[in-house]
Length: 102
Image 1 (cartoon, one colour):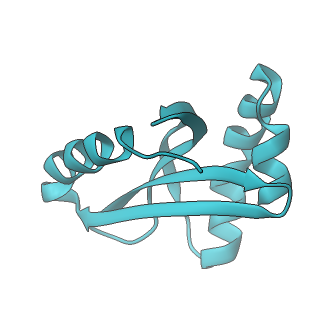
Image 2 (cartoon, helix red, strand yellow):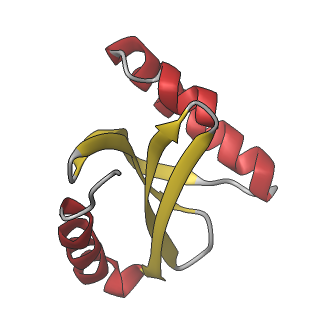
């Protein structure tokens, strides 16, 4: 996934990554995964790939993937039951705004 993040910095790269993500996540989890949001988003002092998906029935997650180096990706994930997801996502997004890549 590291190469996907670094190559996805262009508008075309972001679209290609996001278009392939549901299929790739479904293949890994061996069940259909819906991706609700996907794109690059400001993460504190850097940008990262931002994904909202529902890999498990009744649950959703929000995930930030930040490229730290050529071979390093930082992955931050928060998961909640679908009915509690909005509040959790809002809190997690606020927390990620304070992220600082060193």
